[in-house]
Length: 394
Image (cartoon, rainbow, N blue to C red; front, side, top):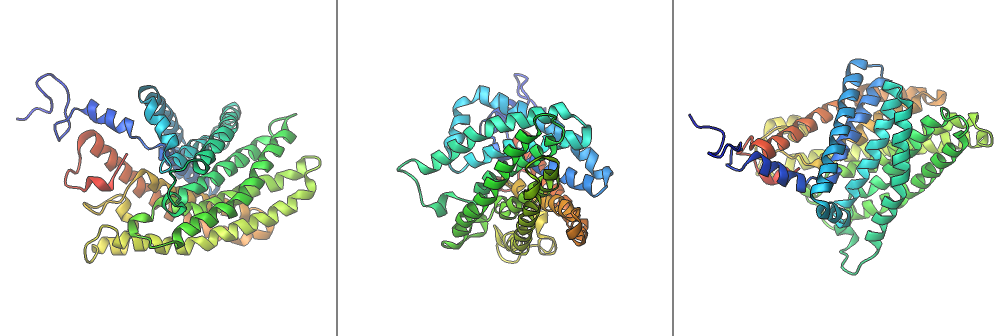
């Protein structure tokens, strides 16, 4: 019988390399966008809590907090072992926007601390970390985009991940809005900061989404050009809606902010309408991608019936990558923001939408999780060696 180890005792994977070597190589190239997994899992759990489905919401919340802690540890080790690679990611225009997922994930876990665990101090600590880290990170990322003579055209270096700028700002507004009433004596300061992020994020959405739309309109788009982060065109408007529904009703409790409450509610509905407009188009392009990307001739019948199955299954047609979480987060966010908007009397009729959309979002989350597990299995153990490795990454 063949032993799974070398003569020197080191455990090997199926292709003969040691597990430690494969883990080290995977750690070096680990995508900073992996915090998108925490963003997605967190917002799905929050959405199901608001739908009053605790059997889904609570296990996901516990799982997500544990995964957030694990990712913090993994990226801390990566930074210590491969500091030059971490710095290179910040300079790499193809990867650096993904670092913003850390900010959004931190705020998402902060919201979970409040809603699931009543961990007020933990939520404050996470919000403080995000507030401190956001300005230098945002200004650095914009500076690297503006400065330099070797830049390629906008259409070659910009995709939906650029909209993480708005998601980052609005995530601060959401958690800040929830904390404002709880921080006695500092409420007005928190509201001012949260409203600043809400307003600047709202205006920047129209600027950034114009650039991203130009990217899609300028020249041909191939199926492999369409990636999960393009869903953030909808997700950024959705989290703007959530920020507005979080802040708007609470402004009446703070002196001087009362007149702005109806204005915030009005512009929040506009953001929701924009998010809703995007969904049919995004679904249609997703179907086109899954039916054509890497498929020679007629796609398998299971792909035709349920195209999103490719996120988790298939040999040679498996399409998972870390950026696939950029698709899941907007789906969950649309559920959460619609539920919160429906909670404002005038918009009560909207409550029927998330009842159905939430389950579709949960299915896509589960398929993406399966895809991630298979990708990690390939890295550690060379599982499914007949699959096309180029279609997966860590």
